[in-house]
Image (cartoon, rainbow, N blue to C red):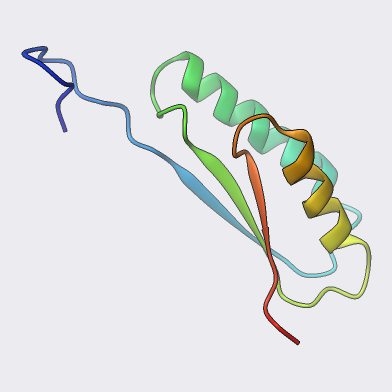
Length: 88
């Protein structure tokens, strides 16, 4: 894709990183911090668009995974984490 107007510089793509989560209470906080830092760096370098995000999919965890995903989604000013969980 090209930028608007007559510029010849390509637009940065919007990146969505999908993270499947099942009973990841122990590893999820560090993983999300790392992915958020990675996205910030890629955005600073203009390698990905500002609307890029991490989507966490919890498929019925029995630990605190779901609450950690929701907390991450609420604390980020941009769509850096979204929480999705299938119906029971």
